[in-house]
Image 1 (cartoon, rainbow, N blue to C red):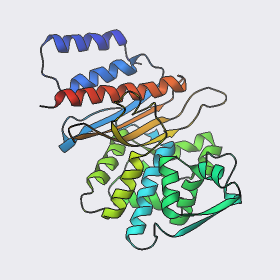
Image 2: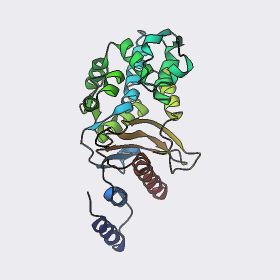
Image 3: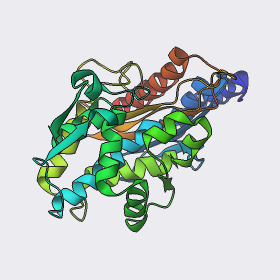
Image 4: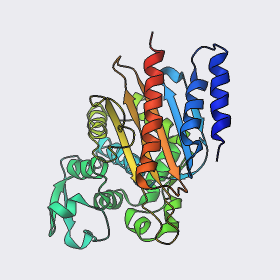
Length: 301
């Protein structure tokens, strides 16, 4: 836990010196936001062109929970671009796959099972964080290790995917096997948004970023305090509370926030080991995103 009074003193001294606004001002504001919270918070923020970057606990391992559905979708789209899979192909989901313990809008719409296109399964998985859809995608790929190996080959070392949603949601301790760091999460976001080296075809690129912009979960996190018309392409994750300890292992949101000027910044916020309630954990993320928004707006010439 950081000392609130000390953090405020640092901020006052910094401003009293008449220093030009810079990333350190934003860092101090974020430190103030998290100082009084009974939680561990990891943050990475990157402006365009590598400018205005900062991180707090940026290299710490955080459980991803459903944040890992974004890289899973990226691997599926890589297979689409290779011609191994097709967005139009039909995917049969059996009733036996609609496990009752998993969050699944697919199960709500197709309680007896159904046939969807691969594109629909990806949209359910990313935009609505469907756990059944996630595990269907992992089975199509050949398992979680295929996703991890793909990102390892692309140079992402601080990233692990070992288990699917069914296993993760039925064993609290195993969720920590699917992890990344705030800095690596931001690097994945930036790499695939910039799409240098044509990692995705134009069709796949447009498809996934349209879905990310349409994410419907986590409305009180990154989007929580931003203008209602702000565009945010993001993915959320949440562990729930441990039944015995009341501790929350993960309240996460990673994404790209677009400014009115057309510029953008990437931001990854992970909250773990939290004794706070869900509303407070989400407000931590919303407060940090708003601080970053205000910083970048004020930095515009």
